[in-house]
Image (cartoon, rainbow, N blue to C red):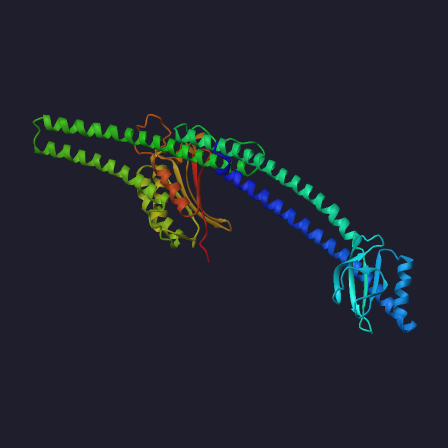
Length: 449
């Protein structure tokens, strides 16, 4: 398990906990400041209102009226309001004593109580007609109570949130660490050679489960490719061993015998034919690999598929008739696709070769082409023995054969190349039952307009 400070999960959890705590702190500070400002505004509004009333009443009373009004208000003890009138020299004329003469405008100042105690006040000072100072203020007790109650509560709440954040950081990083640790251990096991291991799933369907499912699908794909590689390697070895052994045997016999020149020439000719057969095998494997990997430049052009299939049907008609089979055609005219002529021709040739090779004489073989809204359908069918339903997907794999002895001609690559060409053109291929026989259905997209 990695040390927590170096753990990405821990750093993420710590970052978000810290960000959340700072956000709460900022929101709390903003709310506190807004409430405090609102209370101060309300206090100042009361002071302004009271000062205006005092000045209006003083105007009505004339000279000395301001001092009388202030004295009366002090005597009445009007709530938390405080008053003072000073002459031009700063001497108190009416109201309560102050510790200092405030400048005109708003200020925080101290009034002196009867017992000599000081009373802090939020006050507004203004000049009088005679050059003196009128001071009207109010006790900021509500603001002080806010400071005395909210700040401690806010500090406690912030501490709790910070503590929860720290605990949450450790819990979250621990949970993430366990999930990542399980994936890491599985990856280590796979790296160590245990390819059967798969990423664990919690069953919650969360991001980790989706990631694990994707990785498991990738591992399944890799395992399938490795199995296919092993199978292909074995099949290649099997398909090459027999002709190579036969080739060597014939060459040994020819070399050991006292055969004349024509006999040696015949032996060499047979050796060349077997060599060409092996070269054809490698050429077929290379073609499939290049088409599947995109190594071949699949130059897509406007292709008159109707004309191509008609030409192929015409070229295969003599060989079909010579072998005692019927070649029936149903080719719709003017069907065009975006495709590669050589590859599509190879696709049709492979299907026709299979039909001719795996059906008995007298069998009817059909070649058809149709176009619809959903695309183009190319069909090669026969009335032969057919392919069992369980094997119809398997025969598209490389070197796949229906008979396990692998003694019939061919290498089991024809349908694999058909499937690769169909995929390269954005199409699909499948085999269906023809009751009896088999139907190879190739679906290709229509030509784009």
